[in-house]
Image (cartoon, rainbow, N blue to C red; front, side, top):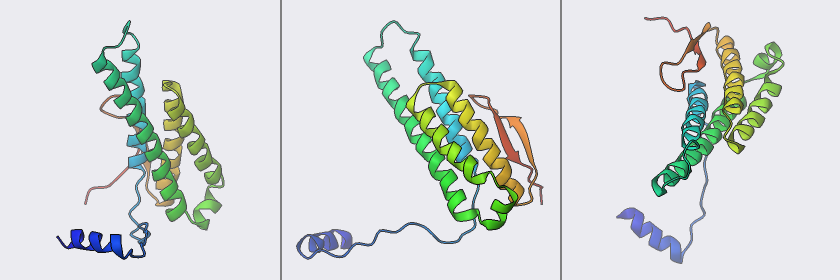
Length: 168
């Protein structure tokens, strides 16, 4: 109710609006979201490739096609966003001194994500995952955490870099 009232007042007497971005130094960073986004891109490509085996797409299949492409696009943007947040907010000069290829790797991830978004090409998405895994390994190394590789237990069953977390 109060929001409706303020909205009506704002139409007659516009308020200055502030636009904010969360730059609270919470120190909660984890690249798993970027990895899951790439896995989703690969999975969407796999599902899209299943549709191409059809002679002609039904209306329902066309709708599925559009949804799959939209999800692949959205997750490509998420990869970029998650990597850029870690690169821009977490990575500092000491990490850059120890990993001099980090700027280049981050840029390569941005380019690879764009390429994976532009096509329905599994290989492009798998190459993106390889670069994201490389970034993940550097990230965890900066925190002094060991990393191991394992095949994720769900489609698309690709290799992921995981932190070795000790039980309490």
